Length: 140
Image (spheres, rainbow, N blue to C red):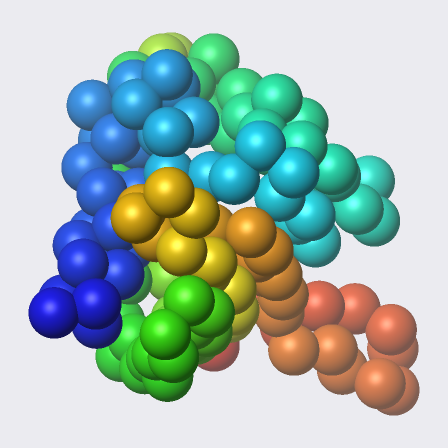
């Protein structure tokens, strides 16, 4: 039952991004979430800061698609973690179609007042160590 609820929470990330619903998205995160997102800064702390990471999506995109592939979860009594591949794509407000890029995502959840909330997430791309650049053209 808990695993199904957590999978639903991951699905709600996509739904709320696609609906361009920042307030609904905020409800998925613990108030003290620590996020290591794909864009600077190195660390964001708190739900408001995490929503700040999503703000460009809401500001720049006319329509959003968020896809999660191969989610894997480990669930305990009040703590869970998982990982997946994710891709944000869509159409910008100027009409430009964006295919996006696949990233690696790690989620950490904690059961708080009987609700599974994201307390930590980490988004990354592989690094080509020879040139120091992220490899953004890989597909799972």
